[in-house]
Image 1 (cartoon, rainbow, N blue to C red):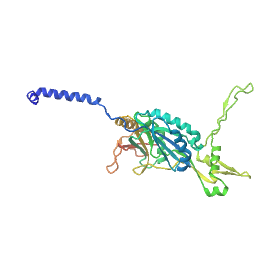
Image 2: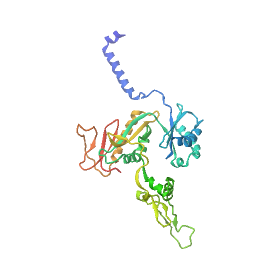
Image 3: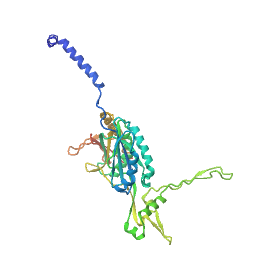
Length: 365
């Protein structure tokens, strides 16, 4: 056989060239992954009991939910974690091949049956049921290179402008913030003053709920009215409070002499984070770290490319009303990143932990 091709070199070269061409044509059509799914699907249940410890969560929240989960179709096991910050997490693992969307619906139905047994505080917060993926894809860090924006602002900016949009990209199974911080009105009370006045935290809470509410006022001239009235006027009454000053003016107690005891008299109010359980940093600077997970069966390379393309497009909306400046490379002593050069503006940046960073100048929306 070898002597046949040695004596006919032209024929051998033609066969080799044809083989190379056929291989080049077939490569784009070859499968990327041929292995079956080995990670079982997981549905996660999250409940929040503000002010409760792990024992309170285990007795009043975890047990009612776990009792309903017993006998769930296709479930292998569930694992519950109750923390002292008032958060309960239950991971429900299903058999391989289970439709994750159908499993999420079934889990939601079981949780709905347990809702009446949960404390009112948990019912007000709501119980979240969602499918999760353990396949880590990539991380995106939103940061300010000059510390102009703190982690609270960056986390809320990412929540409003990036979190849901990236989560809807084809191939992304889930995305979440490492240390989420949502805006919240914080009321800091002096315990010594409360003790002298005979007040409790429940009194403060009741006063806030009674005076911070939406007030539908109806309309003027609405039927049935006497004849001759041809117009109706909707009444817009003041609703929920928005500013810290308004919360500070909430009346906690009215004294017999007509004087009023307000929240400002026993504490202070500020716009801060709902909780301070965690913080995220990038190169020792405040940042918002967003983790993305791969959907079951998705192509990691294509999904990562879609995420990068979306962030490249989304970063154009970070500043408002700033023209584009040429991109420049900083000095070699600085860490490698791309920046929009401008002598008088402040940079607002994003960074992917698997790629270089880039910044735009101006104030964010």
